[in-house]
Image (tube, rainbow, N blue to C red):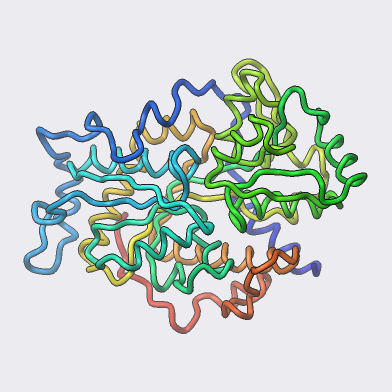
Length: 403
């Protein structure tokens, strides 16, 4: 990788990791399944007797076309299709958002999981539904992996409009009875047995696969990547001894580390994390100095709506989404689960979607990940040329919004 390219990666990664400053994390009080059942947002989050008047007023202010009003759309439940299995970070964040959007507006939002092919299955399903706003897509990292991995051709900044809510840190952990107690132990064993040590990921070509591959290359080792349907499933695979190393997010590992069921090897934040019981999750930079310049940006969590959906409906969804991200309940969940709240909408979100795909396309090519499309095949620039390339000629921003 050229010096210019490394600088570009470092600059982008630093922007998206700059908020990772929490040093002490409280224990998780309840599981995802206890808070958010699989099929729908709980009734207790929906205010059935009244609608939040400030939000409804904001939505009405956005309505321009005749015949569309706050009371007329939606006329039936909205279906939120999450691209990863129940229990992972994407599912956790999107269910919390659906609950708070319902609380703010009175809308009924049903959540459905359609995992597979790093988001491509859920994406195809949503694209095949009418563009009436009744099918939304719950995504991670602006769904960049589906296009890079060959799972579809829709682009995040021309065919979709993505709203960003939060970001996540990556993590590696092992069982207490593992032969490896530290990151250095893993490196030594992997160098003695190239390609034999296994690590779970949230899916082939997904965010935890990308992160693990970059870390492995930086450490000079070869690992065997085992895909699962979500970060939580990848975590359980490690906990159950199906793989040597549990890959996933800090939010999926921290409670298990806190209770001694897993030992942390590294996490991708800028500072170490201490759990409620005092267990340490070391920063990757402390065990592999210099790797930060090569790391991809941490994963993000997004709500997507087809860009050809009527503009007035898009703006109603955007208003409800923004209110949800700013709600006390959502921010409490983010802090407790060690996500990072990061609201982004409009042109800035479109730009970030394109930038993340550009960075990952270059990363996958550099790592020779099988089946990955190159930046040239995707019509993307090299990361160091992104600022000159953006916006591309066919990019059409949505009209400005106050949210």
